[in-house]
Length: 225
Length: 225
DNA sequence: CCCTAAATATCCGTTGACGAATATTATGTC
DNA sequence: GACATAATATTCGTCAACGGATATTTAGGG
Image (cartoon, rainbow over all chains, first blue to last red; front, side, top):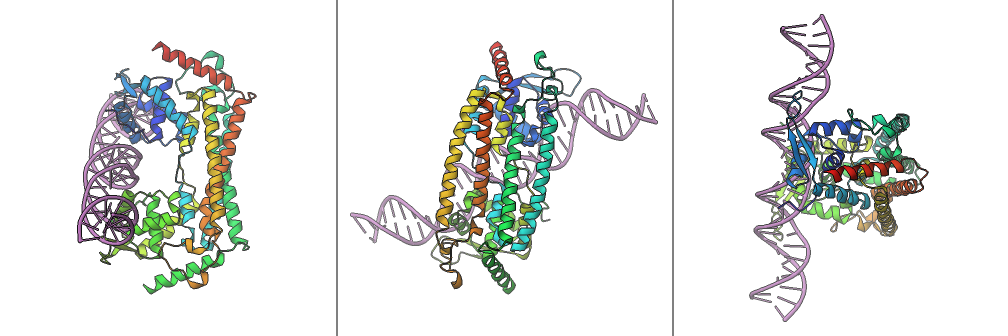
């Protein structure tokens, strides 16, 4: 009975996608993800890598192909994708692209509970966040403009040969969409934070008085006890 | 030996914040979070709620105050915040507000691996996502404009009495920032998706040809085996 | 007054995430 | 040629997350 519900760890998706290209052993998967900077978008932990590989085997999506090959390195197992695994990869990708998932960013949780801090304290922390965000934006923009200068050889794995007709081509933006996405979201967040700080400080915004009162009444209550 | 590393589940933060207001039993915490719509921003699972409460007790952040009170309901335990717990709440909030956390949205993972789908397929799914996103935006905007019409009584818990001077006041936007944040991010995502679809289809964008070639070469390779 | 449904309140077993330890081979470098 | 260091490759134990089961009380209908 191959369990019914889909794996939830995106690292499993990455494993399927890598094995879609060619058979690999786990360490090579990790190295490839890092080389292509995908580990900034897909959380990579060695512990989890071996766990999800076991799970994928259990569901028949991948199989061990050969073991202990090439006497030069420590023993290792090379895995490859099954047809079922290939279907799963496509279905999973379709689902992730078409349906926005309900996620719970930590900053949103903090905003929910904002009234537990005094307004001035909140403003101070938010300004600090804005600085961090600006830094990240600069970093990402530098990264993007640097990478498009490179040629394609940087794209594949370290030991990979490219089809001859592709060598020397410019680095294609399709392999950078995830960074563009991240950049767009961080910019939006920065705008939001700046606007929020403005609204709280430029005191035309109603409830700061009430916010202070809540704080004061909490102070009293905790002082009693 | 009170373990050293901070709890990672934001539900624990919510528990601290609720107990900062007043002592409660677990079920009441859940009811309050739902009543205030915070469960859309903080993942609430009953299993996790009782787990994090145990963990918070273990670290000395909260304590059981009274048990089995009021013979009317099933036995229950009322917890309250310790001074250490109050400090933890503030520190944690400061950290969440000031430092952007490295998170891994599933959509970003999917974008990373976009080339495993043929371009037309990808465009179809992205258009579908754009529809979903527009729907969410409409929903959120409706929700926001509906809630600001209400008075404050909707804000607190179901059985809560408000300070008299607040009754009849308008619903203050400070209690809705998390929804505004969500709205801002979803709008940014929609813009990104629309732009991406445009770039892929309006074929001035370089690599769609290469993308198709990669697909074709994969088809061949999988056909061989 | 009994029965069912809904609301209240909690517990527990399974799964999966991942830090840390382990083991092996290559690469200097003096 | 010995020894530290880096790179390669995987295993294991712990603990948090949470679905689903359980137990109790109230409310309503006949």
